[in-house]
Length: 230
Image (cartoon, rainbow, N blue to C red):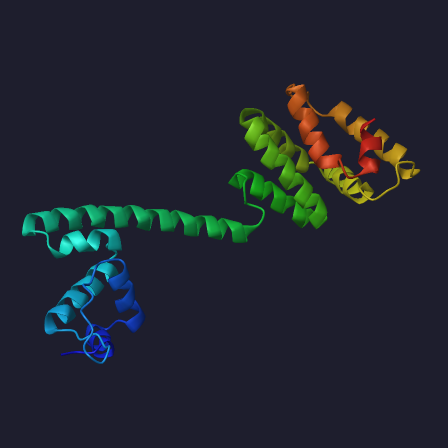
């Protein structure tokens, strides 16, 4: 006769696991002896090894009980089904790990690789981290509500960033975020921006509601930016 501790040791599991298998009905719980101890047999040890082997192979405990008494064909079919489920789970885990990598990437989260590249260009230019975050939020919004327009706007933005004058204007706007709305530097910046826009090629018209949402996301917390748009 075998004690519960010996049984667990023989099967390579913990006593807690043995008790859990009793609780869920996988392993028959033996009667207690006159001293109040459970006494197990070699049959219990064999069953426990089978349970552990199936569980370690990824078989859900809910299926283990049936597999312990299944015929050869039924067992093979069930294992094939479980193997396919594990393959799907493996793919889900792979995709989840890819999402974790994107989370670490920061700028690339929720945006396309092209937008992430543009955000890196802004950072390389010297745009503040706050400014980069604001741009990121705008493009997240654009990708969600107007993906086709976002692609057009992104192409225009990338082209504009190749212009040294636009880059200087962009940096000036970034710096102006914390200005007071009546800062004397704002009118000159507004005029410089208007002059550049007058020289640039005509930009395709965007949905006014989408434009308003994007502008709100970009400037809601900056009275100076609000003043520049007026």
